[in-house]
Amino acid sequence: TPSSIANSRYQCDGCSKSYSTFGGLSKHKQFHCIAQIKKQFQCKFCEKTYNSLGALKMHIRTHTLPCKCKICGKAFSRPWLLQGHVRTHTGEKPFQCEICCRAFADRSNLRAHMQTHSDVKKYRCTKCSKTFSRMSLLNKHMENCLQQTTASNNTDDCTSTAGFSI
Image (cartoon, rainbow, N blue to C red; front, side, top):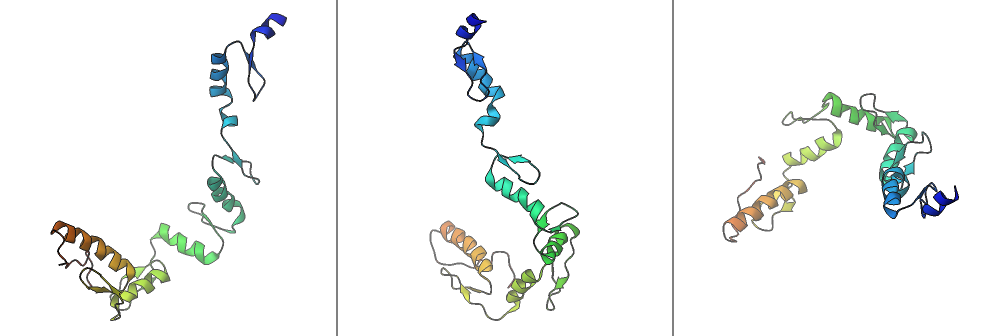
């Protein structure tokens, strides 16, 4: 009716629905058009939508990567990457240190571990001059060394091995 049109001064941009009060329009937008306010990213393969581009990109990999984990569905570009991932589910550790028998799920972690058995210790603590075979061990040591130095009123005496036997 003409009188109801005159009373509907506030119109929704999203769906053209009209309201007589601004409060009515605001309430409508809050509950009806919230999806239009948020930016949505849609998958071109299955039409799933995501609130962020990063989440969409992660999802798209499930369609485009050929090697998929049967346990969790995560997808990989190469079979050996999938094989390494599956070990996180099975707990298998086929790479063993010949010196101490410690086992690892992948070869790169074994290689990094082997440096702990090396006499070459090229990473030196600047506070106490203790040397380490791996940067990660030095970094852990430095955290503790800094805490000890601060705790003992800035003396340079540091004997921390950060819980590692070297």
